[in-house]
Length: 479
Image (cartoon, rainbow, N blue to C red; front, top):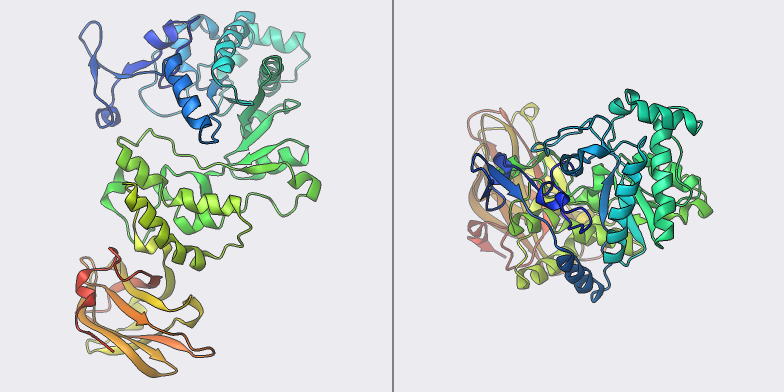
């Protein structure tokens, strides 16, 4: 990528001695121990996998039935390689390795024959290290600015009867695909490799929505769906009503657990024959903003569990059932020391809300929430009051469980939900569900000072030993 070359290539040692190191930015300072540069004038961030490292990783994964697929970016996102070998660009450089995110205009020059010699030599070593069937070549976010002004690129377009720079990119990808076939590997690329015409046997990974994947499958190409909206685990899992301060380091947009679980990778408008080309999906956890293993765990789980079930089973999007079973996964993750994201709202069910328009009384008022459709069987359920916005809070005195209007139990303790919340979860214990019965959660709430408050009410199933419920919510409970 632009920010660092990460694999040893023996034929081109500058890729790692130069291309693997960049000037450190603020994010880097949080991620890794820095080393001084050769002249002592700045600090560098970086590192790379030796070929022995790669063999160790591939062997470890293979023993667990996992195939490691390398991604060697081309023709864009290639600043790190060009910093080491600028002669393979259109302008000749010099270039600095990217220290910031973004899309950079300097990319490989497809007009120069030596560019392809370089790429083929790199792929020779890559294919030997990765025996699996695939090599990912990226192909995404490649600006054509330099190509438009490059005499070598213009000549390549003219000599090959290409229409424009998009078809030049297609020429580039098709040529690399043919070479990979001689090494008994198949090419995978992001959906931008559709630009200018798709290589004959390429597999498309669709990240900009699913339309690129749909197009590729309809043309008879294999597809891996990976839309940013459902499959990017570097986007926070925190739901909007319960932000965590730790998420400030991450993307603002969210990919909550229920959205991952609801993902359907096969577009409904594909024919059965076309649908066979949807191989599955991929969850992406880019680590630009993942400074520690704990943060990686936090971002990957439990969303990886949701995506696995979505893809490996014939599920029909029954999220409440999945949420009830997720507790057992949490127990397993606890035993393995995985620091997963444990927000109860990530697997909760919305059952109601309060708003300024409700003109809440300053005296205790009973508000009923029908919960019958959401009960999955006997067990413990929490009713949680989650503040959204406003200057004031609601006070909560109790939540009562009613069966056909008759009180079964109540959790009575003082709690409140507002800019600062405390003891805002109430646990209801259901020993038995009677067929045909109606179950209601009746909350006694009141406005603290005014009606300037807004929030949502959630129901979530929880084990008796759950860590998600405030300990104060278990006091003063009676049958």
